[in-house]
Length: 511
Image (cartoon, rainbow, N blue to C red; front, side, top):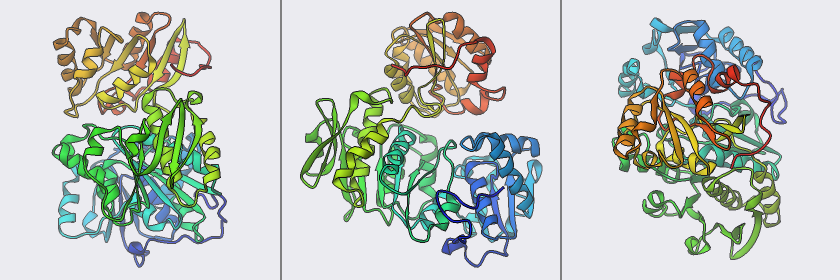
């Protein structure tokens, strides 16, 4: 069932179509990866806008696997809504090509709409060839930027972009009539149809933007923020310099008016000044790091906003529900971003700050999911780099039994390895190319005897349950990519916990 009225917009309002899609209503448009967040949203939008020849493609071998992929990708909808949405999509597509028929007839298309990671899969060689021949490509992130008539803010970074985006959206919802949070995270509810119906530009759009989506964009949000930059996706970009340049696109593409920067992050700060005409806003622990710029800093346990020469303490940081120093940095960035919007009046800032202070950890981000026999169990599935797992271990501030492993991003594991035998009392390592390299690093640091190689997530959970002592934490934090796809086929961490534990839901925050 396609949504017809969302976020206060009337059902009768017609869908606007991006200028680059006008005139294609009755021509063939191919959506690659219809089971994904981006593919599903774009296919639904095109069908709702009256496109009659939308052709879907997905690597899923059959409808059953497509339904599973679609359900996992649309975690923010709930199971019943996801089923209805997939049903309406299947009813509306002119053709659907799965498994062996993937990309069948693709050369007949007038426009291709791929997912953000399309270029990584070997079966997409034909897409590379068609792009080289000049066949137009389009994406969900481009559609949002083309259609939104109200203020658009975009948040990217190696770590913290989901949490910072959610903080910004929560703060703005205290001030604006309509705010959408969309983009990269599968737990968000996409809102392209609602954005399209917003003729008057009443809605404010917050986009979480990945490095892959940045490569698809040819224009920037009005306000862009980089939370931080650490080594990540280096194999995709060909090195750190190219990865930094990719992140900087959020400031350098046409349309950016304000750039929010983290003065405490050495890599993003060293990348150089903002382009001419882009106003700099800074977040930092200390006011002196702001220089002459507006921004947000900490003073005597408070987040203080500085704007136009005025200073205002807006939030006592001890009351945050988000644990850890990394989340204090996310809060500073969010407050700097909210304060940078000219539509936000100075007296409104404390109200926005109070609203974002109530945010709890997002799904799969140091999320307390179970408690039993004095042991806390945390789900940190979204930590797919060693740096983010290190931050999670430090945030918990106690001894940890760590479940981790996965594929290889060619990122050094030295800092995480040195924690083994100190903050990390035991490592339960699941298979993967990255796992093998992590094990080597731990052995070099002298902690090899504290690593157990496990064959399944269920086995790792059983082992963690027997190893963990009262007062400790069991932390699922992969430190590598590919953990979800490799180890969540049987239902994942929480289902494995429920299989052996009978604890009620946790009642307290971590840390």
